[in-house]
Image (cartoon, rainbow, N blue to C red; front, side, top):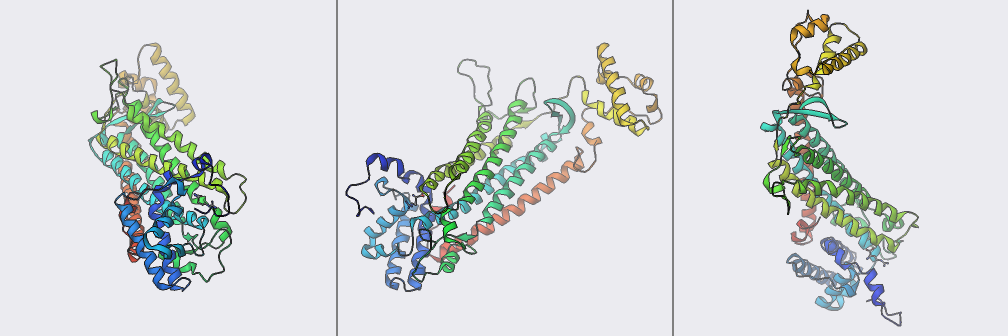
Length: 482
Ligand code: ARG
């Protein structure tokens, strides 16, 4: 197609490098939607005969049904999804099909397809991320959530925490991620369709009408910018990378927690593998693979940003190379989250006391502060006491009350006792602290944010489904995207 002015077909190797049909398959639904909206507008504005527009629309709907059954194959010789749809339409309805590309270019078409794809894929990523949030808060509210382990700084025992507080903190990160995905999605407000190749059209097109048929607020204000702009793709890749990084850090929690020495987490049998040589092994391979996914996510973001460095404004073919990284980013995110969600839901979160109860040292110093000792002095006295205990092969778990008040006479009046490890998180009642009440507050807040975000995504998805229904477009193609 489109080679009338050349004496030779495109070189095989050139076609192999340039065709995008394998990755374009995910754009099929968006491409058909955009074409339906364009055809409707062309007919309404009498730019093409009304009857031609009707025949084009019904041809496109038939292709959509065929694609919905998985029976529409993209031919690599036709280069991309746009030319495949146009050729299939013309084969189906005859010469009316040749009117579809009036006042349109593949440059505004691909920009429109990407806007529609990103919107839909972001919504699905939000839904999955929110399902992970729910798995985390449910685990946090379960029996494991009340067990305590040492929170770490520098991977050294720091202060005791409820597992519920740890899981809740991870959930908070993911709810923030879902909000970030949502804000990228809501930023995709304008329709590039009708921008043409670079400068719009001399035909009396109505860009506001096509924007409305596609569920956008209006048309993009500059055709030149619209055919060059892939900002939403890079923003998507950044938002995805953040989810993957948080998933990676959560997976690390599981990998370390499942070490026999650590004994904080027991992964369910469905998420461990064994060794081909060592029969005793319970390896956390799936958590490790989740941890690994962030590497690709960062790479794809970097690839996308590097791609547009120094590109002149206006469509440049380089932009095509940004599509596979975008599609792969959403696909890998889906795979990651679908594995991580049941892994979190089925894991057991176990209590693991520290042998020498080091984390009580802060409580001891705080008790001295309550008795009027400046904190810096309290810190130094407790530190010296710990060294002294160590030299006598003791630790805070074996200290008796008389010994404690001998060393720290200020504590006699208050009757201070070192808290047990299970009681320690409850002592820190400051806002956002480790106590049960604060953990509950966090979980309730995260759950509320999750519910609101979910409702908002559903509302948006219903709006798009209504727009498609008005054009008689089957929904089957859209659930699979992302
Ligand atoms: N396959 C192209 C892409 O994905 C579509 C636009 C092609 N435009 C062109 N002038 N060659 O970017």
